[in-house]
Length: 639
Image (cartoon, rainbow, N blue to C red; front, side, top):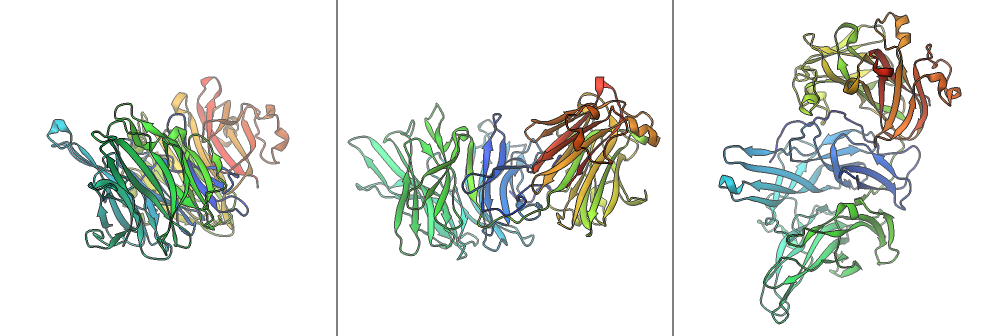
């Protein structure tokens, strides 16, 4: 299940985890779009201050904060590998926005026997010092009936992954395969005061009326060591019950899951699910009755906090930083229509609530389609408002039609930058006519070449490429370097004169307040349809005023032949909603906001001046009436 290919993305977006100015501790959560896609958000504990969190992963979900609130971990897929089922855990630094891949699972498939193994590390918890992370994954293993296999089995696997070295993960426990009843593997937490895990495992309990036993799920405290349960390093702390009544034909069991330690480590909150169905069949069970409990680990007292109406389902819960409240989601239980109700909630009906630990003050924070909340323990540090990244996709030609990306570093400190020239990865993602072998050059302000790369694995400092930034194809190019304040240009060409659709992208790896990307731009040949110039940019920090320009005709005065004669400019946000559009800059309603020195010299060129909040944006440059030619798209931070 371990040690796979390095993570790569096509449009890698640095995550925003802080806003300008002081913040209260944050609740991160996931919203579900109309097409089923997931979007990360964060909000204050009272539901205010909601912002979306753009991430460089597909369908990032089930967020979890580290105990100190410094890192946010998510479970996500690699967008550059659309055929891969397995997911991995990634972390994002709240202070810098830097990302790191924490697990290295991958698909294992034996074509001869059609055997498979996919891994989904849904549940996770950082150790208090962030030196390790525990994952309770679902390992989907087996084969198909037609191939002579035994069918697919979902095995909950508990592991510890070191975050300080390259050691293989510790195999703590493999629980009984999922059967649609027990909740083994659904949740894990790491005590803030002891080196011990809390996790739900499949268990059993004698019938209250005698006989049995019945299958239950209980919370266990488990030492984070190899084969802990088999070696006796685990003990059960909750006491779910079971019973059967022959006279009525009813069989019921209790299942405890989603354990969460309180900030002081004394309390353990968890969800208890009461399941009831006919004694002779488990088909079409009654709706679950769920409740949230708090177990006092010092004296063993188990106190119900709140009980929900039948047919509701809780996926995750967490404590407030001061230990006085719980945040949780609540959804309608899924009805399969075949075997009846399932042990999961309908994401589109998920809602987020907070409640006091004494059961009072129930308050809804978010309505349908929002869930899996996690509450950070500390406030987010302030970040400077800056452009964290630009990534432009367009057709790469030869000569003057190469793709040229420019950026300016302002301030007093040197800044570490990663620049990538991508092509083959686009083809893997279904982009037609992708550049097969990009070559990348970096020039300083004098035009001198200061770095080049053809194939990223051949770079002398390939070991400096951060986790999550290594391309998925050996032909793609990467330059990692530290640059002094000044202007720089990245040029992408075909290594052997090839042409095709490529990406040039630059990322700020050190979001320092004393140095920032103040301007980013790309020049290239604008065609029609999918070969328009598409520029992605990230605003990190808070809200600030920016100017975005599409320049074409005035390039002729600089000796550029075949310049785009009439560029149009559209700016959209991460949801695809229009933020601004312009054809001829003098016709804009707010031309008075264009600063001195930023007005284009040709009235056919386009300008958008607007205030952008933190997030990801796309600038699209086309030729009016489907004209083509060389153009520049550029963005400036005006504050």
